[in-house]
Image (cartoon, rainbow, N blue to C red; front, side, top):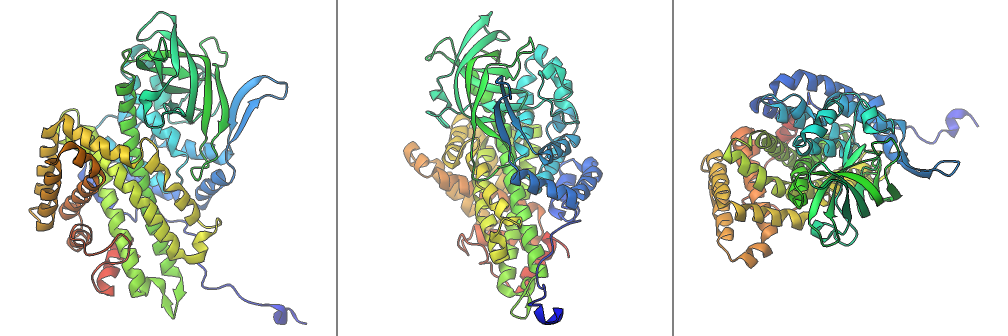
Length: 555
């Protein structure tokens, strides 16, 4: 039998890996928002960063870091307790990439107009590559405004927090060039109810702010355990004492390991490159941060910043799911023509494109609000009210969109060798981390109850941005009616309110800044209820919908 007779098939109509593309260069909505919100000075660096992210070697780091998850080593060969988590080299390469672009600190290290928009755009680009490595970068970023209030401590930490070189050494933080900060709030009995915490901190040297305490207790989720220090909530003095916040390093001042024992790493659905752990404090040394008894407000300040990153991370999942879907549809044929030319597939892709663009505009607007919240009451209203609502909605939509994108790929999307399975497994984490959906929606109501003027200011702004659009006016009237309801009814409808608020904000931003056709289709499909929750039910001809796809990623 000849070789040609033995051949059974040739490989064709398979989609090549998406490589050598630049996620910044192809994203016109992101570039326009960056320029509009004052971050245009960073565009050149982001374009170069995008080219780096598109390199096959860099993309391989994301795959490797998730195929070779971290390993816990509690003891050395000779029996000493070491509590080390060891990572694949690809993990450190990803963190080096993050730090090289100061995505963990840029607005604080370079406080200039547009810095929040610049950092958000960069974080958004890296989040399209890999999600697990974002966790320590986010927590480090969110810790900075809290630690800045502790002048003596921050004077030593600042150069290590702002450093642009990753330092993976497991050493006392003062012996390192760069440090990362984690969080320790959740306990097994409390979950999101941090007030149920029972970890106790007893004074060792002095009492009050800046004094040393010994912490005893158990943290159910401790992320990420190899950070150089963590901000931890504990009760001062006794199990019924006031909740306070502590800076707990991995090493004591004398260079010995702090009494933090890692019990196990969590075996998670996704986010597998990142280590999440369960730990015990056995008299661990910690420094009181902020005022005694003000632990919840102190840590909430940190959590607010992490919630913004949840929005950015989920918007990035929406974007990369869209790009991968368009790439697949442009290279795969079925029933005699490319998937991208099939009318129904165009509808699905166009709908995903609208979802992604609206999420991108919202995350950039929130970044702008964070930059100006201290001096601009309207920006403060956006930060306090829209952030939890956006975290609720954008994270939910990422779960749905990654599932839809996997369907675009068909069976090839369901196997681990391609990118879609990892995207799908990553999608739920942002919806859960730093407060699940119900917590976010209740926080929206609490923010409004604390400052009704903020709600009035915000709703008026949305109406003005939308230019009096009838559908937006109708949705604003519905939101105002819900706010007039009794408190129990408001809580019952909190998800509906948060959803309506985000869709109205997205509609207003699309009308103000997007292509007119895209904006009208978003409003019609999201506010005028012309379609259901599934993607791919837009009105319009195949040619019209094809133009939406081209705007999302010009061929």
